[in-house]
Image (cartoon, rainbow, N blue to C red; front, top):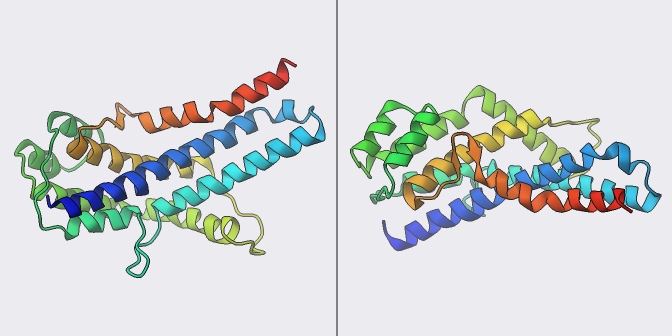
Amino acid sequence: MHNNMKDQIDDYFNKGLVVECFQAERNILIWQYVADEVEFLETQNKDIQQLYSFIQLSAQTNFILCLGKIFDNPSKKFPTRCILSFLDLINSSSLEVEIVETSNTIKLLIENDCPTEMIDSVKNNNSALFPKLFVKHYRDKYESASLKQDIETLKLMRDKVAAHNEAVGDLYIDFKTTERLIGFASEIIAIFGMAYHSAIWRTDNFSFIKRDAERNALFIKSNIERLKNK
């Protein structure tokens, strides 16, 4: 692959998908860790209650905005590092991309119920065909009715609540929706990262992005424990 194209694809992958997926996971966990301790926090003084209320609200806004970036729409005027732009970038390249890890990529493809032709293209080390099949498969999944409904729910929250303050009544996004959206993004990250970077992002349904996010959200638990031990 031409270095400029490879650098751009890697930039969209790392900064558009991996970083935003990590931040979404981290902020969801921060929100949850505060929610888990609401009963205790309500016994604390007003300043502490306001602090954790602010942290939780900020975490909610952050995870909606981070997920919104991942599922944003492509723009020619102001390029966005979203999933669709990432797939478009791979698809627009007529240059062959070397698959650097075959056996573990095949394992991930099987684990995620990917089409047989995708698996065969990796087995045959067909570096011209695999990216096209990869893009087609995940574009089709992106356009599925269930995922589109989840994306619509997310964008409604982002546009009406997080980015603006419209008088639209109560809006809500449940964690099963965010889990499905993050799951879709992390599947793309796992397969692309393994095939082209020989990097393990997710295996046997264990997400290393979520593990790192948990480590980076533990400060909430640590601080609440200090309050309990005062």
